Length: 591
Image 1: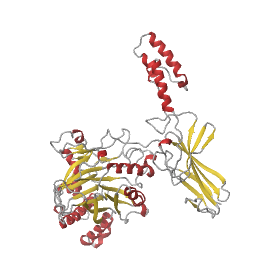
Image 2: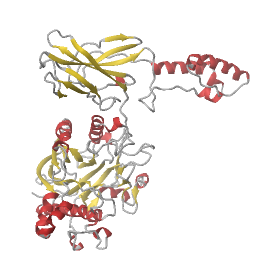
Image 3: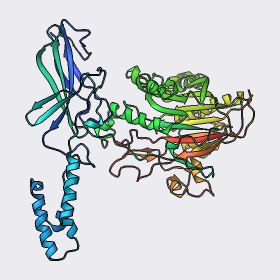
Image 4: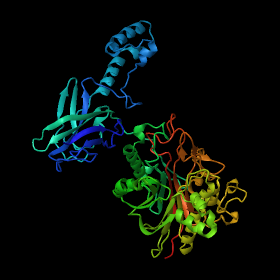
């Protein structure tokens, strides 16, 4: 007979807006085990699974700590602290008496703090406490998960608690009404004919529901010298500009408790992170979005359909799998999205550095060394290049017969710090490919991504300066000879880092943003912040001859992050920060 062996949640701390999806392990009638659902519409040998979710409300009114929302609040009276009245267990029921005594004493002495202990304070305080502790009432006509709409919540009494039924599907998404309350999940095997429960009902209790943390919004800061207010909520500054976002979102496979032990486990869970990331990405309202470390399954099942609802068309390039040994669905890659009302898709190019490595070894490496060379060069990294046509026109340009194209490259370069030659070779290979595209059409270029290279490194110098110093120490390690001669490490694209615009002289009001920049490199102090590393790895480069930077998304600083942690955190769900730049095309492009 069908039976439930175990139920558990990936995280027992529920957050408003983040779906709870219990894992239910079953024993089927044939003695096999599995976790597939058995709904009433498809019973298994006369039995199916029934789920229920309850919000548990205690008769004892409870307040939740505003600083630690998963914990019960403890109340402390400033007046008692000042009067040095000791805190005793259950002292709050005698609190008014204590205040009356203290008020009488201080009034006799004419103490200037009499209002702190006087009747007016007591009445106000009592009102405030009562307002805080008011228990929320159940909502009517609830619906959640995949369950259909059903009537008002069913209430059950159990001792000093009331259980309000809030869901009848396997999954449940906590709402604001649930904040501060424990949720209960029930899973039972039901006879399909009698509709009676068979055997033991499996249950689990969560911690108290907490509100989703809300980081301080980041503003769009004008850098072009135009006196405009660039708040994200105000939308685009003008119809002739467009915005580009680059963001390494940290794949779920990489977001382990071992690597990020300082981040609460619930904040590392994918159900929480994906909703938090989606809110952040959608909130930026970028016209073009370049994401890195997007797992294949998350692109297909989450990001593509969710961003489609917000008007984005999606393109994806998965990393190759010569090195990767896990599930094909968890291989990450680069995803580029663009707003359908702002751009149309013209062409897509896919760069597989593994294929370039094979071509290189065939041409340059002796047969006896090819295996060694491929082991060093083949790292599965990719780049996604998309050519888009703008559906908007530049202000001040009256030439409707011209097309405005833009080429957007999105990449994630190899991470290994002991393979600096491979890192530089990948960047050079990408730039040479972009040069060929630029040669075929005079087209603005945007090069975005996580380059795993700090400012001043050889890959950064190649991108920003168009060449590498032949005396660079990073050229010393080149066992395959792929970087020689150093004079070949050049490109002709007029690329400039967008965030270097913060370092421009003559723009007032940017002092606080310049303090978040490295004056030696004109790059952000950090775009990646963990306990083990803090520095800049992510960039948006643009063609300075055909594009100008209008605005930049403000950078985070130490004050923007929680003092006791690094990234990721409950507020920011990646170990990287998002970069966003607003551009204006200088000229139209010929057909």
